[in-house]
Image (cartoon, rainbow, N blue to C red):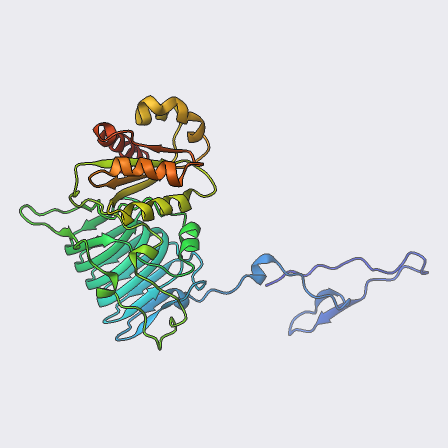
Length: 370
């Protein structure tokens, strides 16, 4: 209920006589209540009066069966979201959000756009999903196949039959949604699973086959659904998040560290490197984007440290580990031919490249608390 204030008369001092302010009253059963000057002015509006009313139902999906549902880009805009008691549904949440909880769902296919905080599955069974989030956790779940981006270490608890693969997805707004959620596409710890309740002699989780395709698990939206206008791709080459081998066994004993320093085109340059290297048959193992201090340079880059201190101070450092026989020489050639005008660090030879990789990614994991 708003407050009403009486105002001084606007009559000019040149008018004769002292006139009392003109007021309007509303008759009630008890007393007359003065409302102030009869000036026909609109009541003052405050910011909270103009705020759009939020309907909780717009931020939850509950008790649905055999339908294709979700939220289009721009519908959540960083709000929390809840999915519960759904069965045999295709669910597409194509927006960024604060947190998402999924409870008591069975036999559903789910796509979740970038989540700034946590994604928590509880009491779910037979779920196939694509998820991007800061924190990922399951409890009391069975048989889940997850194509995951997670900025921290994923955690499962009292869950069995869990399988994980690297996030592979694209829709036009996805890169902006990652930025809005504060997530770096290069900090994906999808395969570094922590089982909070391990069982002796059993393995509650594993990695999906390396050639697994998202569409074999989570279909594209029905052409007749509300999502028909969204251009979605699950091709690894178009994925916003780079496809990495993660914790799987490396095919070669030779790896190379390739580092880009802060600049306007760092992300584009990293993607260009991935395209160049993979087209030559090399494999991307892992990526990280972290901040470094000048004093960190000596420990990580050793003999090259003095030359890199200035560049480290400019901002975030983006590093990639590439693997395959002959990868060090190939990366050095790519650096000189493709990135000749860009400051980069590349392992100098295969005898020291493993040390380069371990030094950087051990440092990055410490920085990120992994």
